[in-house]
Image 1: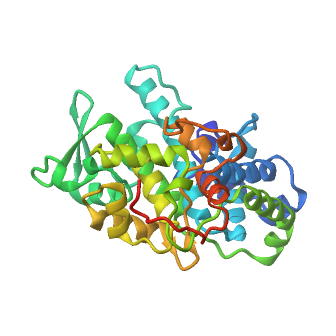
Image 2: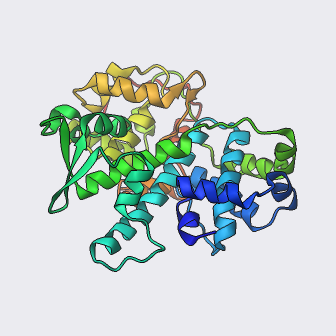
Length: 348
């Protein structure tokens, strides 16, 4: 099993390598070992930390086989938003790796263990949709652009903000890498949740139980009834609200954090959230809510404190911030009972 397949287990060649190895998945999960340990780590870190990267060094075989194990674990876990969050974490890890590989390719230092841009495009069937135009610029066929950018927030991704010509959309190198990250996310999420045979489910029952406990311990509240208490908002959300109300076009990650947080208040619809946050595009907010909410509340929780900190959105920390791991947990503690809000939602 090649190192390249282990680094990019979603590739068609990696899947073929697993099939060629004729691995008995039932025996693998029953015996446990490095592949199962790494599979559990993939899911745990993806759901709790937003990354699928390992904290330890595993061999190529364990790393590659841990990917199908992780997909089975996510399917058995059946937690709200688990599939989407897992797919995003795998895609983020893949992006970090292929960005480094592409840089080596451009510097003519790449070897056989790195992934080329051409090979990745071919694997996703995008070779005919992406054409380099020089100086780190590319033309992307409009149909491919629309599909890959549909899950991205930020005004700059909207087609009306792009220079569309002759059926293609010009993008720069960083934008193409983001679109390819979305292609990875689609590939990883494809087919999930899986229908898992009983012998495999039984072999992973202990691991699934451990994951459920870990997720439950770190899982913030996902739904608040009644009106929002502005005085109970965490400092990071106060700061994002101030920036948005002042007319700043928030970066994608900041807007997602803000809208995702406000989406947990059941009484707020798209127009309410747009008004509270000073956003002039309620239809775009409505689209985000459709992705975020299900009949149990918010299916995909907004970013944790660790993620907010990584993006520079964790600001003005107070004493309570040191005791909690999620902005929603902060609000729950400050507000007391989630439904006990008395202040008007539009107040400062």
